[in-house]
Length: 235
Image 1 (cartoon, helix red, strand yellow):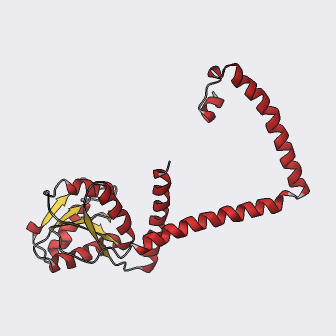
Image 2 (cartoon, one colour; image 1 turned 60 degrees about the vertical axis):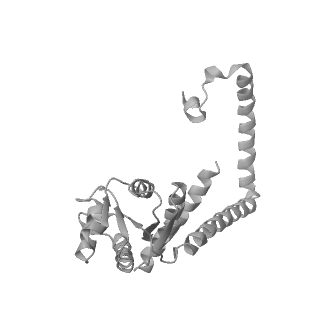
Image 3 (tube, helix red, strand yellow; image 1 turned 45 degrees about the horizontal axis):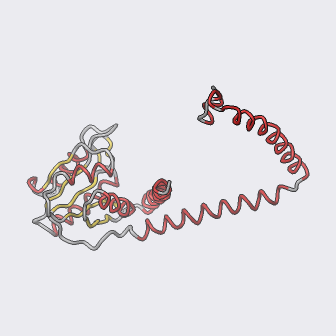
């Protein structure tokens, strides 16, 4: 059972060749372990291990730096341009209190809607843990409090991720309409990639970050997500 749990193979399925391989593997592994311990005791392996660790660390740093650069270069989004619909991506709230992330997105949305008075905004965000109202409702209240007419705002209050934000909002948009997505700068690349994957030809309007520390923190997170996503796509 332990062998099956670790290697995903049942001993009963090994057959004669499998048992022979195991019989050979055990003494070979024991000999290799003994030799490895001997090298460590003699100090011969320290230089090789140090070189290996430095090389591995350098490779990780290069990959992360490349991903960070890609995220940073796309953080400005696209030049502001009128669209029939602007999808405002939700972000976490505490009770009914807006997070800084969401406030930045709403400030960008407010400017966008003021600049293009015939555009409609889709406010996309469901209700998560610790939220007493949906993110969509929180955005609706803030924008109407700041002078945006309620009939220019459409609520999408079921989504729980960026993918669902885009997918569920797309279902509310008539065919042939032009679309923009409003989010934070550090989130612009991933939002654009998801929109494209969902068949939505959308420009991304990027909100400026009010806190350099928080902006950097989220950009690091997005770079890690970029590395993971690319790794997954190549598996």
